[in-house]
Amino acid sequence: MNEIVYLDAAASFLKPEPVIDIQADFLRHHYANAGRGVCARAMAVDDMVRDVRAKVAKFINADANQIVFVSNATDGLNRIAKIITSQTWYKESSVCAVSDLDHHSARMPWHELLKSGKISKIIKCELNKDFNIKIDSVPGVDILVVTAMSNVLGIPQDVSEIVRSARAKNPDVIVIVDATQYVVHKKIDVREWNADFVVFSGHKIGADTGVGVMYIRDSERYEPDKFGGGMVSRIMNDDKWVLQSAPEKWEAGTLPLTQICGLGVALDELEKKRPDLGLIKYLYDELRKNPRIKILTSRESALLTFCVDGMHVLDFGALAGASGICLRVGNMCASWIHQAIGIDGSIRVSVGPWNTKSDADKFISVVNNIVK
Ligand SMILES: Cc1ncc(COP(=O)(O)O)c(C=O)c1O
Image (cartoon, rainbow, N blue to C red; front, side):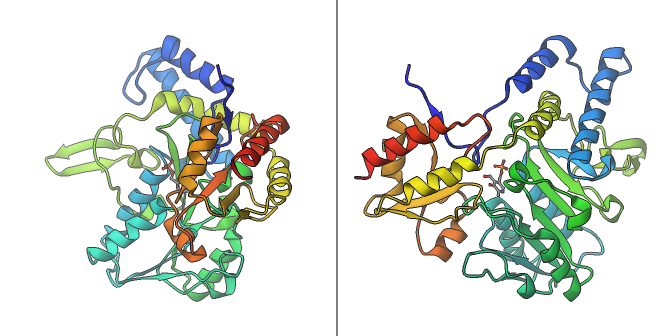
């Protein structure tokens, strides 16, 4: 069998063995629904969910009741847009700021809301010549979407300063941070960021698909967007009920229990071993030697993105794939940054804790075979 070199961690992490083990063990020996049973097994699942929630909270310096389990970052980002714009106090004259660093999942919900008249305008945060958000120029708006790290350029943005700058212009601005790529490489402190909402996906940090995290700073400010089992404590009559408090009020329906179980272990594993960004520097230094390769990222980036002179990115991806290299090519669901750079797509290499120098060497030799 051909050995695969998996250089696509930014798309989805390979799963650490302890994550696979605990999920298999949970499914085999401990499975039951949470929040619904009084038998010991069901209550043990409640304890597991509570413990993982507490672990996630500690991981980003939040309180446990500020942590909501969602399906993934996209789910969280869409829900947040809906939650904000459906509150009785919300004003449709609100202006939202986004940036060209945003993933489609962070920005498209707001363009949809503009089309339906739920916001009045979208403006863009200015980027500097290196495509980082210009902190002093962050506009004074009602809603601000911040991508903490672009999945194409891989540079951490100074979220605290961006939020400070936005709040200096409008203290009431609601800030949403997409931390999906940032969380892999950097410690998050939501208190320090001072944002209203933060989201990330579990599958990009070693957990399974199907679970993500949505941090909500002030749950009391918002009415829920989803209704059903698990989020209501008492039904009085047809349309009168008492809701659970946060976080349960946000979690109608059965949670992805197996994936939550794996998420707790994934966090432990990530804390033990983050991806070695020395490999990205090494790849950067090596790929720079090939005159047909145009690197779009910096040596300090958390990933490496490039184009090949005279070659379509899909052709490169197919050839690299045929040589056992898994990487990502195309617009990476981040069309706006590609448009800002003036290209249609790019080739992205990203590393996880499993990658070694020998993977990097294999990749370099494949690249040098493809791009002569
Ligand atoms: C920065 C960023 N935000 C959001 C997403 C969406 O993540 P998911 O597909 O897990 O919802 C991604 C996925 O690539 C991403 O890189």
